[in-house]
Length: 117
Image (cartoon, rainbow, N blue to C red; front, side):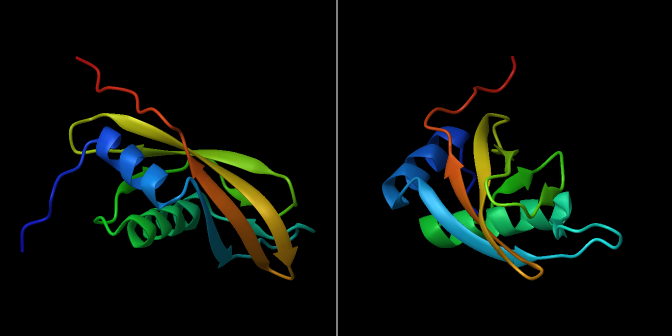
């Protein structure tokens, strides 16, 4: 099977066409903390799945540098890296927390950053 390779610009256009604000839902609990926490790996995977499902494109390479603490209003940043090396920033914002479930919205930046030469 051949997977299409997309630039961050293509992803940006796909995300804007699908609607810039998307909603995702995941859960994770860290022991010893009062607020649930979603690991950076699970957060990146969930963001990638939601972008792929919303845009109808293959699952992108997404990385998130920090865990997401489940507190309403908390934000985080993730990065989508395209096969050409260009990147697209994605903001994650916690909209609600229900027990250990963290509900959050994702919003992709409008413009990608070109690959370094």
